[in-house]
Length: 224
Image 1 (spheres, rainbow, N blue to C red):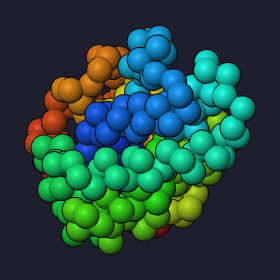
Image 2: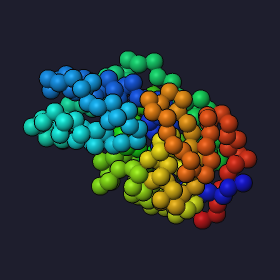
Image 3: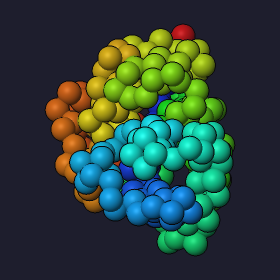
Image 4: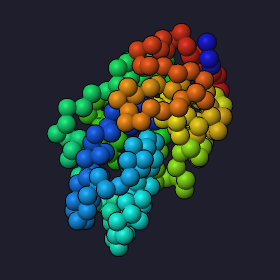
């Protein structure tokens, strides 16, 4: 049994698969700017775990857009939210049970995501899970995205926990590396629909699904 004082979840592709919706939002943004997203190299389009601002920065450089990154973010966000609003979204198998069980165990939880915080907030509320998380730290709150550990160090700090006493749930190679560099215990949960298979070998545990995790047997609350 691993003793923990807090649990931190990545969001996209860990709790819910949103790759199609992010792709659709990127495509819509490119169309609005007069370009075709599919002209971006496949090696760029298939990467997981990158911050949305870094995606936009890459598209801006590739297509030589003059519009500022901030304006592009503002244009893209409602596009993504609209796509999600009409999509038949489903949580990853076992994700809701894992979150609710940790919440029942009174383990403080947070989201550390490369996505946009307000959009994550909307989706958590849609599935009735927002109250389980004390806070959301998104890609705009760190200077460098994953695999830099900054996101997990900051999130642990805001939870009042030592990163070494946290369990992190991730799905991507860069996320796993970030969690381990922060000193956290990392449980990698593979996304079977990922565009590119992720190297999760640096995680402490690799699961094919949250359904393989017996939360109460795996974790105990560490006294603080």
